[in-house]
Amino acid sequence: MDFVSFLFLRRRINLGEYTHVLGAQHGDIHRLPKDSSGFLSEDQTTVSDDRAPLGVLPVGEVLLHMPETAERLFGSSDAEAARPALLRLVQEWQEWHRDHLEPICTYSTSTRFGRQMYNNRTEKKLVASFLATAKVRNGMPIVCKNDIVLIPEGSSGAYAGLGIAARPTSRVCIVTSNAALIREYQDNPTLAPRFQEFRVIGGVADGDHGGVHDEAAEQHFVEAIGREPGTTIVIVTVSGLLAQSGPHVDGPMLRVKQRIIRESLVNRGVRELVFVADYSKHVPAADHQDFGAPLFGATDWQQIVKEHRSRICIVTAPPPALRRALELGVGHDVARRNLDLIAADAKIKGEGLTLGDSDRAYDQAAKALRNVAGVSVINNVAHPMFHEAYTFPVPAAPNAGPHGEAVVFHTEDTCQVSGLYRSNGQCGHPAERTIPKGRKFPTCPKCREVATWVLLDPNQDR
Image (cartoon, rainbow, N blue to C red):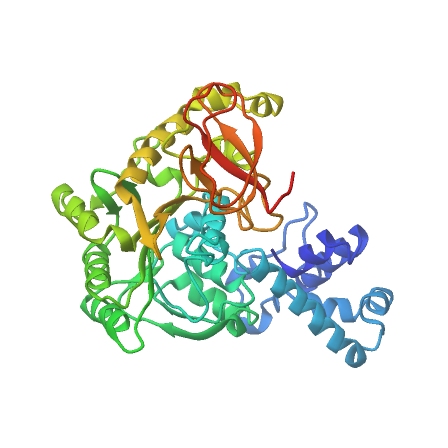
């Protein structure tokens, strides 16, 4: 979002001031001679440099020359006295972008990568936020303080970096070839203090995917993974991710991605290899979008998962309607959820939600991916390695853990967190019960069948 729009939307300037700033920014253009139809008298793109318009004036410079506005915004109409307050306002604009995972740069939608930065960006931001905030590993997020995180190309990778920067205590070291993330780091100075270090990997530029590829880049990635201290988290972006055939890519990064994955799994210093995606990467679009080539043969992929399941993680985001159902506390358990029962839920009907073909296709793909990912046992506690991101951490979602990750148990599981739970049995009629820590979860109080129990409110005495 540009600075003047931020000021207007934040109610710092009114509509008249907003319009005046836009006009004043282009003052040179307004002063050029025009004919009776309002066209410029001559094509200004062909004139010599010394006659060309000076371009767009910075917003701040325009505001400093609007005395009444400057007095109200900065406490002074004197340009020099007002400048520190202007700089604080600019910093507020920069911090807003950082805290909301919003790119501060503008990307051309005439390019493939520019379009990808805006396509499904809500889902990409949800996944990015989940990586840095959802406490899914013994009370810790996937990306922890002091981690060294490798992020290659791709719009999802750029948002992953922004998600890490949005967490005040991250202090993570980033190693990246991601052109958009590098650009955001350069253009938004409030990102830098959130990272311990920001290292850039070079190579032959790939304009379509916003990264680099060649043998030198491949070797740089390998060195970043293996050096001491080495990479602890590797983010992998994909053009497709399917249960049977695994990750797909549609550009020249195939060989580099293969090497990154294999080196990450061989090196025990890498705690997790994280595939980031969204629903569009699991279900071909109506126009039969091509996911590109699989990184591995189906047999090789199944063997990789079998050998390294405890270190391979998938974080994705469902389609909007199903995501809203999850926000409402319905259907958290991927393996057992029934979309017909969800559609019949009173809360879903009350919102007028309709689960369409894309929701159902995604649900089937998610179930298969969940089975592939399985669970990892950490300190004798089973942790799922397939995650759905469906809400931002602030405000916390009702019916979810403190950072958006649903706390889910099943009948006969032992309760790990005391609190108020809602059952989701085969009958589709939820009931609420307070379950103390250490007690086994019962069957559904309504139908007496096996039930899923979702934490509503921890540590309740009711």
